[in-house]
Length: 424
Image (cartoon, one colour):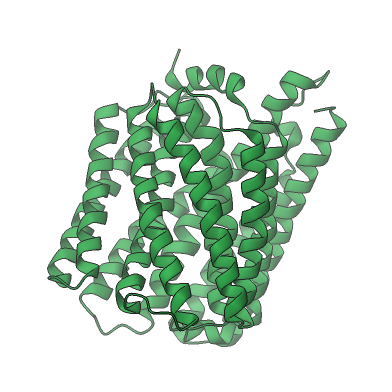
């Protein structure tokens, strides 16, 4: 049996109660919609966004924390125990984390957009506490790991990055409240690396070694290659972290990008091999989104190099954010969610329902077709708006994104309703 098949058998005995992943993924679906609405309301400001408070910053964090962070908490708690062959974290703990994290993200985003620095600080504390509690649960899980060393190593890198992410985020929140904290240049430099590439990026790369072979019905990539890719990613983060303190920043950042490119290049090679040798070749629109995400990751490294070299290209920071958050992380995550949600639903139903539905029976294909078209069109529209400096095109693109997010909401609600009808 392939390792993908072994994962399927082991996962059934390590599922959290259905309410846990569904509440995390459902909240992510709602925050996805709110993020596009916030961007549509501030499309003109987004074109010249320089990092200050306002709705563009709120939209960014609705994606980063509300969509990416929320999904990471739910998916990590469900998938890492399978990789480590350890019991899943307690459902009460995960429910408590959700109740702390969800209003914290909402309050943080409102505090950024309004702006109200008290709300921002309160939301940041709630989010920080939720991440800390989740991190403790994952540390306990990883310490007893008995399998998948490549995935486990990525988990450790992600948790180390999470510590830096939380310290830098709380420090940045403190600057808005006038507290005596380290310089904004230092903390922002750490935050911009360790949040997307460190925490979310390391988990995305690590969990891909489970999910891509599982959905493609392929052998898991060689553990040695996974570990080499992970080591290069860790080296890249270390070099970028040192550079943020101002010591030889340009050479160290270039070296970090080279190490990161080596890690990503090897990861892409392993993913391509899994897709090429898998028994299931037609993976549909969901994996088209995943591949778009991989393209965004490669593009973000190129744009990051241009930023380090200070090339005279207009709106480089906005291009970097679009490639990194919109094209890579959001596209990759949504593509995976389109597969994970029906798959998990069918697994739950198999153990509880009288006539268990298949993943395809739980999927609203029309909603996903609309979401795919709108998501791609929205990203292309935002890129065009940046290229020709058009606030109208940016607003239109964001509205198309809203339509796509609504379609994804329909997909989620339909799936839950069909699970209920099946008695799961």
